Image 1 (spheres, rainbow, N blue to C red):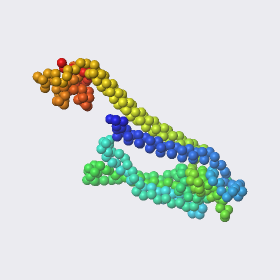
Image 2: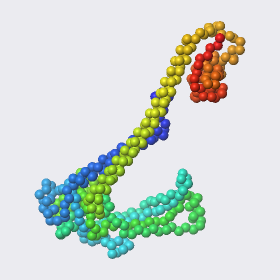
Image 3: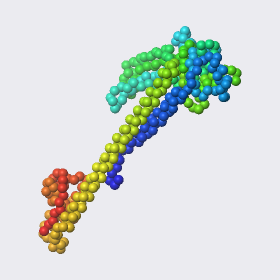
Image 4: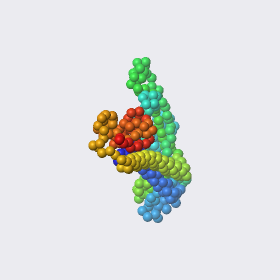
Length: 350
């Protein structure tokens, strides 16, 4: 591609588009695989029959199964720090700082946040069925899905004096305050669990993360809602992958169009040069020794000041340069009047 280069913006857009397309496609395939596994996962009720089923299953293990039960603590439960009447088995406490940061680009104050502190408490718990059968939940912190609810949320407004406010405007950062959030998995909540279901040697039923790296779920939603959410997520990743690929294709098409225009201009220039050379060979030229010597400076190219003027620039009609210098011009404009040149004809001095 002699004389043609891809711009920095085009290169960045193409690279970003292909990279994002690959990432989005990978996430789509991963989500699609999860949905397919959910479709094929058997659903069981938590009762005495479940233990009998696992006893006759090879390895006393179901690689991917769906169960639904009520959260029941194994031993002591956790109490909310803000409402002692609320009890649970998993508690997450988060402290966030909110700030206003001045953006010189948008010329506005932007709200930002950062986590100052995060603490998670968990106690052993099980999912209970209609009878006394329970399934112990293993490694609940590794599970995906919405299985906690906010039990307390409080914002502490920051107070500042006049001097501190002036300093904040000068620095471009203004603290707004602190946000306290407490989330809990309450006792008695109905949970849908999806994972590896096993029967331990002591006769305990357990739900744990799948050994084949399939996604582990604990969700307050029912199974159909959980499946639909993952299906929608897979569809969104697909849309993003296609949109990113189309954006890259558009940039590639634009670069290809510029390259075609560049080639077309070169073809037209070569055609013009051949036509100019043909007319020169067809014309009768005076021998160099017979060229007039008087006023030779008036017939010299105004650009190189060495070669004779041998072309007429149209539409302005100026005869001011040689054809070689005209081809070297960055823009096809007349060196005398700066008008655009639409055609070049050979010129011969008698």
